[in-house]
Amino acid sequence: MEIIRIEKTNNTPSIYIDEANLLCRIVGSSFPEDAYEVYQHVIDWLGRVSKDNKSELVVEFDYDFLNSISHKKVWQILHELKQLYKAGKQVKVIWYYNESDEDIMEAGEDLAELMNIPFELISK
Image (cartoon, rainbow, N blue to C red; front, side, top):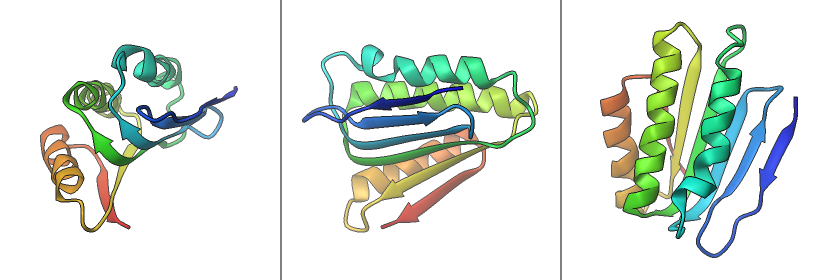
């Protein structure tokens, strides 16, 4: 089991994946030229951990900015989590937002309602 660290850039978030502890943390602004490349590590990881049904899988999102293409990749990640949840895997999403950022807060609220999986919204 490995730890994957992708450093943030001016237009991509940092991504931290701890395979052993089933934790993924995505932090920063997301408006990349190629969202597929940025988020594929997370999608691949979800495919690998689907076999471990013992531990809770936690994905944390902490965005400053999220463009529409990145939003689609987040949707894809959440859809994968929903499929795991339906298959009996314990999953939890934590969505952080700045108290003054209504756009990120509302995006989290909308996604939580649509996905219907354990989803926690936390103001910071």
